[in-house]
Length: 139
Image 1 (spheres, rainbow, N blue to C red):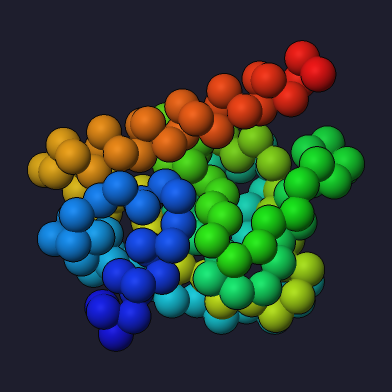
Image 2: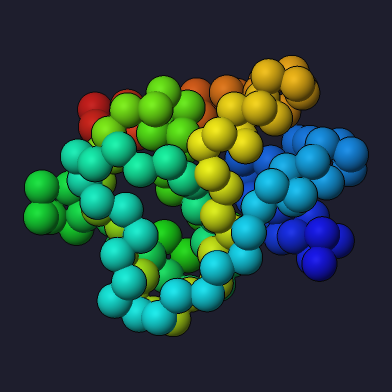
């Protein structure tokens, strides 16, 4: 099963630059979660300790009750709360039956502390995402 998770993680921009041993380390702390349509994955304003990668299906992102994005296979959510431990910035709800990889904060923090290359890759991709958001806000 770890090999299947490695292949899934390899397709996610957040982890795409990791070497095979690093991907395996992430895969070992990731759990496969199948959720039915309508499942609320995160709640805006709450402190919830996990990050998700959408393997298949779709997830709607709502902020203050307004849909701001819909995610599909290969997309990820929860990285801000994962990195800073703060409250969720949005509510995420499965639009369709979905398969997700879920990583818990404590395990991820330990991985980042012991594997600097994983930390660097994550920070680079989160920076890219923030830059895109900033550019979209200007245009």
